[in-house]
Amino acid sequence: MIDQKYAQAIETICRRLSREPSPIWAFTGSLGFALQGMEVAVHDVDIQTDAIGAYEIERRLSKYSIRPVIRAETERIRSHFGALAIEGVKVEIMGDLQKRLPDGRWEDPVDVTPHRRWVDWNGMRLPVLSIEYECRAYEIMGRFEKAEMLRQWLKDRSNGRHGAPP
Image 1 (tube, rainbow, N blue to C red):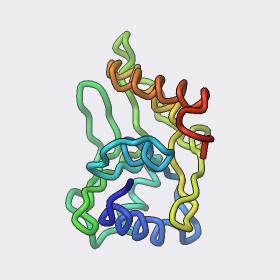
Image 2: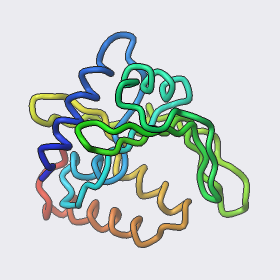
Image 3: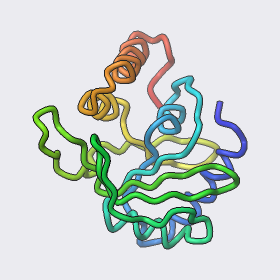
């Protein structure tokens, strides 16, 4: 179940990003999992896009900006990163996300398009990153417990324990 404040933030985001030309983007992380039917706690909203999309999303939602989009890097990931606050909900924007590979090199920036799936929720059609992609991403980042949780959910769903895929 997605809390009402998140529902309001989702509606605001979708309303602003659906105007043409629409950037290529998708919900990721816990919200993306919940939108695909997983029973997880949602604590923020994560949006993944390309570099151009990150700045366009920031522009379209500029009145909510709390951290401008800039190129940022940690030990494990780098991206064009910014943050918003919509209806009291933290929204993180990540463009051209790259993960550090086990050998220390950086993977190519993620193209969201081939990993994007669409789910119907509250009368809206929402883009999310596939659970399969998310599982691989967490493995690359060394977050094996999270990857295993996703893998188990996929296995249970294919065995009919979580209903039909959205």
